Length: 95
Image (cartoon, rainbow, N blue to C red; front, side, top):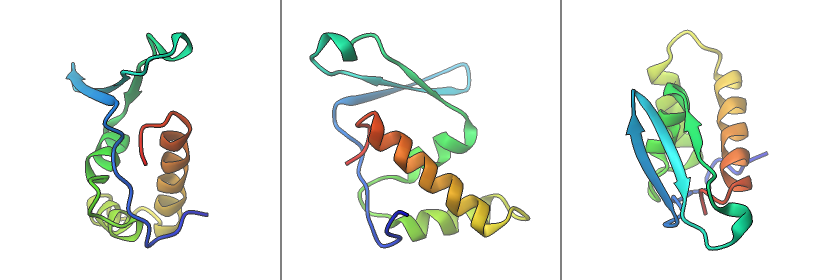
């Protein structure tokens, strides 16, 4: 479970580009195994990515999601965001 008071920042070695209404994450790492990897974020994931700014806590971002996606269960949004955090940590996109 992610600490809801935790504040994450984007890794400076990740470049983002918007192409055809999709947000693309491109790592600029130095090892061969990390070269040529790109990650595509859907609209919800792009919203979450935008809110990870080194200022917002996990709890604040979840509240922003609740405001944006009214009618969606808070527990479900929290679980989705925590999964997103785990995914972003696994590719070293956030610190």
